Length: 138
Image 1 (spheres, rainbow, N blue to C red):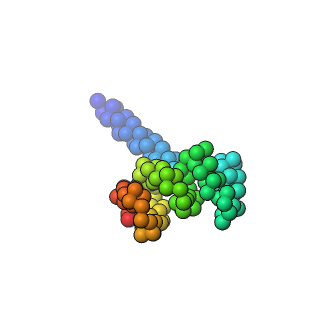
Image 2: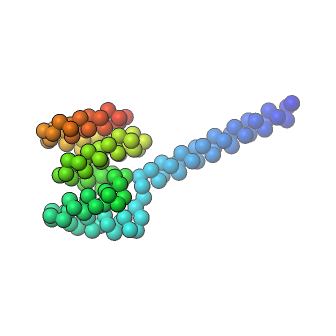
Image 3: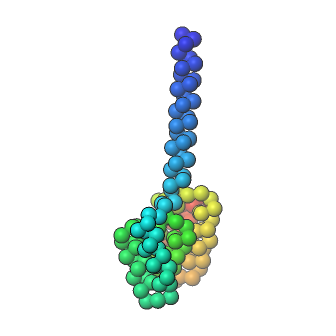
């Protein structure tokens, strides 16, 4: 009887360590590390800033890779001028942004505040408010 109790405690400790390690790994890769292919597309995209092809490339990137998880890149994409692309991005943000750390949420929250003040589109305003309500910090 006394032999089983230390084993249960040891098993619980191992499980807790394993769970913590998994959470650390998930947090490490939650930002969606850029692959070499994605990185080259991002670099190309950034080089096109200020040109007519800029928005087309952003749309193509979203179609191929989904909403960026990297905050710096995401801030760039939130400047997209196509309402439908922005609505898709905002819909994705509701799901994955609350899982990010508070610093990232704060940066995106500041950008969302700016977007909300600068648009007159009621659909965008509603989507922005929905994302902001999902954040731990606004």
